[in-house]
Amino acid sequence: MRRLDDGLTLGELARRVQARIRRGDPQQVIQALASLAAAGRDDLSFLASARHAPQARATRAGAVVVSPALAHEVGAASALLEVDDPYRAFAAIARDVAALLTRAPAPGVHPSAVIGAGVRLGRGASIGPFVSIGDGAQVGEGTALGASVSIGAGAVVGPAGRLHAQVVVEADCIVGENCTIFSGTVIGADGFGFAEGPEGWEKIPQLGRVVIGRDVEIGANCAIDRGALEDTGIGDGCKLDNLIQVAHNVRLGERTAVAGCVGIAGSAVIGRRCRIGGGAGILGHLEICDDVTISAMSLVTRSIREPGFYSGVFPLMDNAVWERSAALLRHLPQWRGRLRRLEAAVARHGEEHMDEDRKQE
Image (cartoon, rainbow, N blue to C red; front, side):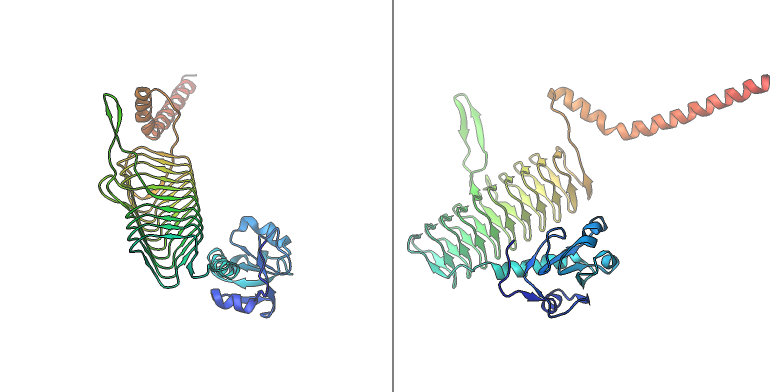
């Protein structure tokens, strides 16, 4: 557990998230953030759901961020920071603590970096060891490039960004302002474009770019391919987990979140504020509208036109059989209703016959 040397007082924390100190001393010092189960007297935790009430009653945390509705569930030994949305408040505190714990990269260019002709570096940029920046590329003000980052010729990385070690941004791609990209991710590799010829697969040049908006976070070891002709686009505020494949010409709408190991095939268009669960697959050339949630491990095989929560997994089988089975599966809810109505009609018919038999007796 990483700890602050000087700590923060409850009063300072309350002001940061506009919380009410319902119980406790505003001068009490908090040095770390922790779960309810692991927290000690100098730690801050949070309670956002009633299902964690048993841990809250037993916690040794010095203070707990909690909503008014659940405040009574926290043990009497813990101070209370009361807010309407404890999860978001704790997240805001965690961001502040992370900023205090993180050593900011020193501005300047490491002697081992290789800087091409015509490169423009913004004021306060930090260029780490063994970084390579191609001719005519741009790195924005205050952006930090970690060790062995590679920026291709003509690429643009906006201001206030952080590219961790061994990130690759290929030629002519654009990364917007305030973006974070974690180690091993490749932006702008060629999309999977081949034509089958008499002597094997023939390469189709990928002539587009990747254009990433502002406030985007991309996890480790992701691959976002450049477009074949048009650009692959990642909208403002998108959040991508680790090990995600985004194929050529895909477009992700603003504030869409994608969990780990998702694969999105070429030319799929995903709307704004969507949530894609881990391990899901989305076939190419589909459209998913705004405000759609796809559950983990689902396979999206058709466009989604209405907002909602969608799930679906189907076993592997011969394709012709699979298509017939999938068509039948869509009608199961309708058939279930018909079966229930038939069962009710048969039951009523049987009761009528029994009544007639009694009358005859």
